[in-house]
Image (cartoon, rainbow, N blue to C red; front, side):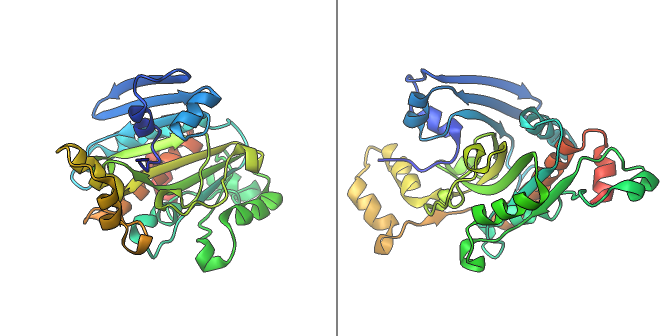
Length: 294
């Protein structure tokens, strides 16, 4: 059975012992575990079902239970984002997802707290002491069913007008383990395929398709029901795959599982990601200053 996961860390765990072309480093920073995975070869990428590139996974105590020392977490996450960012140029931040569906609302919710600065120039910037702000534009483009347009089409159209040096994409992810929900952030320079977490992949948004670096950030908010059932039954040696598929995919449509406290998870995760992006893009300003501007 193929497990559905957007996390490179989980994909690597599934092929343990066959890590040729995969480089992995781990670091503990207070209550955060930072895992850096680099997929270096086409063979490794094919085996993992991931694109070649860098994947940074930050694991932390559940956001719904533990919301302390947030500024420290933001500083660590900001540093990891900055590690993948080009140093100069306009950053175009895109929040993917459908805000009316809570597990898919991470992108649009995050965008609301990202600091847009492209319009702060000239005398306004000088008189307010904001000359050092990096230009940032942002958008939550909605989904195909709401707009009739692919997200990639919207991004490409805007890019022709604003000429960004990097795209930063935020989207909800799928994990193969429920313990990852609300406890993990993945940052990658390989872009993203919108809708892949729920099995409805749209055209990819990455450096190859966009022509500029694309950094993606995401938090797992759902687990595929079939994956969860198989994982649970496997531990008791009762993994009848046909039965699992029948029970977890009524009418042939797969079901997704999300935690009961998903509203709180999305609220807190979106704030942390937004402030981490702000901190990464505006290193010359303190978090207090950025929060005041937002």
